[in-house]
Image: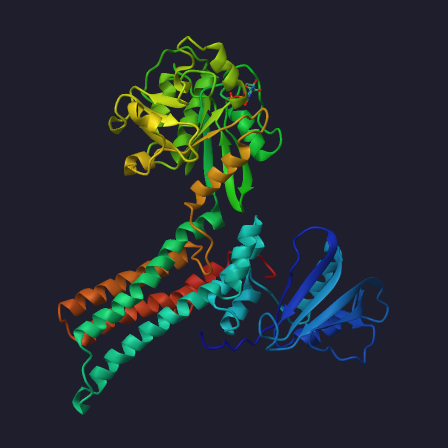
Length: 529
Ligand code: GDP
């Protein structure tokens, strides 16, 4: 913890959001908070003392003199140092949420000697007084910014110290190792045994796994925190906009039977399992587009549609996740083959849409070749020009719960556990009907599984780049220490690496974070927090 700061000034801010509301709160923190507050409002029972965590009724007047007119009533709550949010004397004055009243109170607080609080300064004071560490302070901001319940839960757990608790035993072991080496150096002449190299290496090796798993937790933390973009791509009329609307749960994108209606990107933020997902509905990828995957150009599309297709390509390239929509009633075209081949190894899902029509389309075509990608074995034939590892006649089996694809000859044997990594990286397939809603729940589940990489929620995860950087630096410094130890380098030098690791680990909780970085972090908070 940083040494408690000696704060002498009293800060004030309107802590509720700008604009009108049912109530609004002016907050004061610092040594003069109570005395300024008692001059700002008139307590209904003037003899009453402000007691810790007790709300008192008061009146707000338009001026400080005896002729003043009462303009509002207020509830004044006092929190005595050190049991307040900032660990200083803190007063919250809740009035009706009128900007006029709140601004009057703030202006008078400043006239009475308070200073306007910087963004995040209340939380910064909580941090400087040691009431919160930096991960907890960041969690306060994350909670305020949370857009989904999962984000709020995650922030609340971090605010409760989940991350700090996870780091504490790692730090303890690191400090013990440092102490061991320091003792060996300090007391070398007093016959204190020098720590054997194997012992140092064992202790460093023990520190690595918990740090590595902490580092890996950032994958989920970042997704919970920032969410992901999912681009919906496919040929015109496959049902992209209809699926988009199903996922958004309202008619956001225009759906028509005329191919090429979606000319521009339509985006909407949704939450799946608490993970924020930015859905991007794209223009259908049509053959003949100058931007088609193989760059061929048949010149049959108008300029607006071509621009739409170009944007779709960019969205496809940028998105973390891709949803390829195929039309279950149509044979795969070359563009779709290329699309499927292009997403191998990328996080993608294939939705075979219009499942409600698929059966009838199949029976209508019985005897005839039929929609070639939905043969009797429910199999998307990836015949050409697929990536080389797919061979010439591979297929996606549509009725398997998780995607399974294999050479056509062996597909009758059903899914097996003997897939190659390349096979496993092929997208999962889900059969959907945007019309009836069939398969939409399964599609959501697949999106969630893909977004989280199947990682389960765990307490104390890294949620921002700063935290991640602190852990990677710790690991790198430990690796240097291990190398130095293996090379029998003097303990003084190994200690330099270990101190670097300790410094980086401490910066996670803010103990060694430089002031300018701290100021930068707290400036991202809102005023009054
Ligand atoms: P997009 O061009 O890929 O965005 O396709 P749309 O969502 O605009 O849909 C094209 C046409 O297919 C519209 O007439 C939709 O009503 C229809 N459609 C979309 N999904 C389904 C489905 O699952 N079943 C049926 N029967 N029709 C669908």
